[in-house]
Image (cartoon, rainbow over the protein chains, first blue to last red):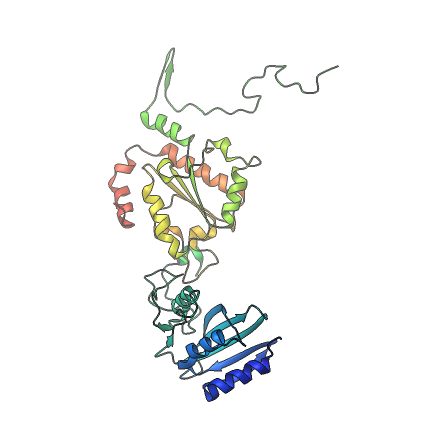
Length: 167
Length: 195
């Protein structure tokens, strides 16, 4: 029996009720927006419930929406039911002033580096992460580069020489 | 019937066979002796036996492989022996984009090389960051180590890389033996925080 989108929606709505904020289906992939402090509970349910069985974490990433006041940072989880080959996208939104999210490392060991990467680029603070350090950028970096809060080009830069590179 | 391959049948002079010999440096020659300055002899020896250390991180490295290959053949210029230990080499060839995270690694490689050492930055990325005008890429390796010759191009053709090596050879040939002990050179290294 293949898991239909209606079945997933029904299961999650029954279990979590109004903690599931909205549903969306784009390009054939179901996407749920969850209240931000319920991310781990929903992931655990998707993982442990035998009829759902989303036991593979494909990816964690972040998105910055500068215009959404109070929910600027989105954290997106992609989970996969390998047996039925069904994928599900899970989104949570947190304010940029306090981007605290519960870690999924207890559930998926692979979440470790994914969360470090999300921290590295978006500054999401994963509560309970065993080793929340930068993973791709230099350790000395004191900003989160993929946040949309920087001008495209800084005209005051001095690391490019006007004379040689025609800036 | 004539042999189809006629090599070695007729003895040719070395110039006819396309073998170039290094020119003698300036000096005084008489019967049984040749006198010149030590600088010139050392420069001659160093120039024609450079050991390059390729530090290839991207497409310029592919061009370097073509340069080392039989078609362009960098070994014609005495740079045949590519070493992969910085301690053995005297020419650091940086080819490709150096991310900021790679910066300390490159610097460490440079520090491990023994004096005298030369550095050539091959391609736009190594010289200036190139098209990667971004937070994660070092905007030219001369931010962390001194560079002797820059080869422009994205990527440069093998001819350009050879031209860069020849420019290095000119520097090596004419370098004073005292340069590496001089105040100016020490100040240069000091500027990069290298003792």
